[in-house]
Length: 302
Image (tube, one colour):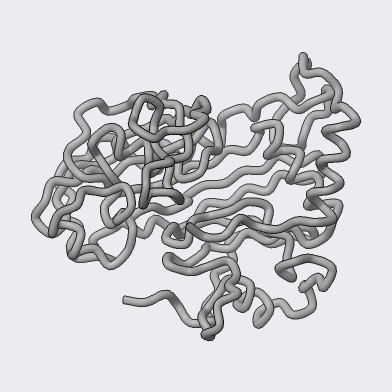
């Protein structure tokens, strides 16, 4: 199976200031390779030519990133002011993100907090990968926290697999994939951090999907929930047999959870205001934000 054509673009949220699209797996946000290839940027230009912004590097202001292999919710700001408000939410860690994944093995604990610091891997041949603190070649590890909830146990192509909901509380590169691998439950189809065995020949994609996204900007609550791609009707190799936790119940919990408090006591529209204890934004932080808005680019896909 291959990534969808340039004509296929699934929009799950749209307003005057934001779009949230359901990015296809194995799809780059943009590409500077010599050969023609489908990209999210091309899909957006084809579907929304009037929204393209020639002043930006990619033609659109992507508010965050998803790995090439990861599908799901990706937010696009439609003007500089909206991009700035989204940037502020990400910087203050007020964004709620939740991912679905199929991971190898049956995870025994129904809920856990994964707390491994993550750093760059300096090992020869692994320069573009990450690793956890304490492993050989791990440079400059930073605190990284992920919440994991088990949804189902089952089999994928005959091998034991768990379906889980992952909520990153920090935003490190490849965080979810590294944390799952550190638990000895790598994401199915993850050839970078997965198990080096013939079992990875079966999946047609990496089984990681950005399921839920909420960005509580000052003027608008951007909230989107994408369809669950890990169901037997879409992939006959996946055969769940034990329900541990209802996904619908978890969605209700996500929607009802209070947003982290904003800086300077300025509540967003998603939740009721709470007293703020954060210091005001410094001039250096403000300058960094302005530079990000004027010279915004993405890191290359790993």
